[in-house]
Length: 132
Image 1 (tube, helix red, strand yellow):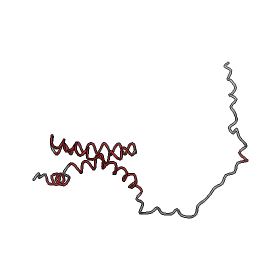
Image 2 (image 1 turned 90 degrees about the horizontal axis):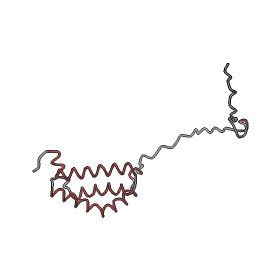
Image 3 (image 1 turned 90 degrees about the vertical axis):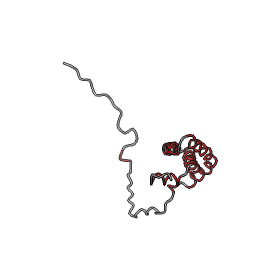
Image 4 (image 1 turned 30 degrees about the vertical axis):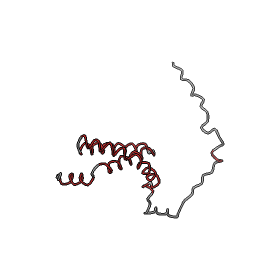
């Protein structure tokens, strides 16, 4: 017959003091938690956005000049497509990385687009289909 070996000699489950020496404390809070403020504006990140806008004021004219060149060489639609693609990419980078540089990039694309392309005329064309 086959001999079955003895079970291994495992160390005990508790290597410290015995369980009887431990005490368990339960704290029950009967007071209600305070309601969060309805006027919580922290999601706007005023400080971070203000600093990014101040840097973007310097970099946005370069992006606006590039968009004006695209508008002159191509069409308004091409400039808007480039501006939209760059803005979406900048927002995606900012969402993925949460860095100051990506926030500056997002504000640069937004401010440069507003500074270079005619937003009101494009909105009228988009809503009515008329170019006149």
